[in-house]
Image (tube, rainbow, N blue to C red; front, side, top):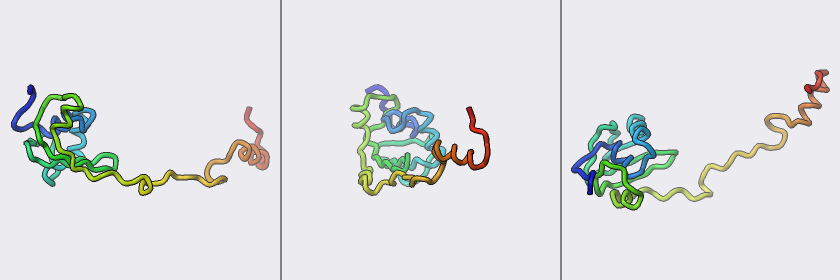
Length: 128
């Protein structure tokens, strides 16, 4: 297949197998310490080869993949899925995810009715 090599840059490989939307996002993740190859944080130019374990942290979730084929050109999703073995832990159940914050009535900003009564109480003229 065109684009196959012995090794490739980690940012290019992550982008090629569609683990990152753009190559610049993959490079930024590497520079930010969110990408580890074989347990070590790497720079975007680090070379990956077959058998390397890549850990990518994104949005509070860690993705663990083993490189099974090295490519340097972006490919379709079915072909990209063949280039790695996904060893990621399953996502947490919905019950364990952070609950959405619920504000009790009366806390926070006043309603329109409450604001108007406050303005009347303070003797301010209502806005028009």
